Length: 190
Image 1 (cartoon, rainbow, N blue to C red):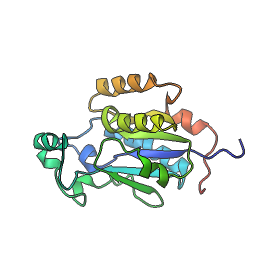
Image 2 (cartoon, rainbow, N blue to C red; image 1 turned 135 degrees about the vertical axis):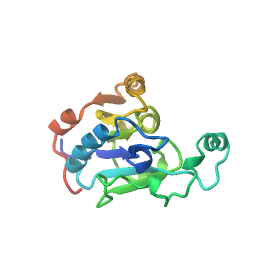
Image 3 (cartoon, rainbow, N blue to C red; image 1 turned 45 degrees about the vertical axis):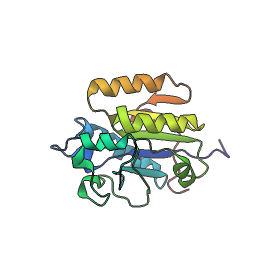
Image 4 (cartoon, helix red, strand yellow; image 1 turned 180 degrees about the vertical axis):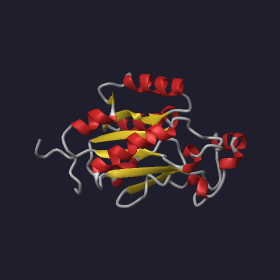
């Protein structure tokens, strides 16, 4: 396997807005996804990207009616709602901040360097994880979804999103935390 580049772990939107009960965007299985994502994070060392969804300063286009439906979320990115949950301190991670559901773009690709594979986890499976996975796969990056380190708006939505992403095999592979951790060890610092 010499010459191969170790994959990156991309942890999608493990933020207060999705993880705190009482938030309009609370993800019911957030705690379960958080446990799996935290286990993965330890294995990937410094090859971890933590994403944060934030509202745009001024919504445009289709985002205008979206934020009319969700005005509570139209706050600055420094608002506590958009903070990462305590289980996901920045430490030596790369932080990706986007005002879009999908977090994969040319800027993200550049931040992760020469990677050809990512392991993806986080919330919500049926929105930001799905949008990120499809864009990354479309750009030629192999995507492994750690299904048990993801959570959807509902369990049904979570399963549906996984089923959709499975249609993109072999570009996207649905896996588990245990399967990822049982693979080749990820170098702690690369």
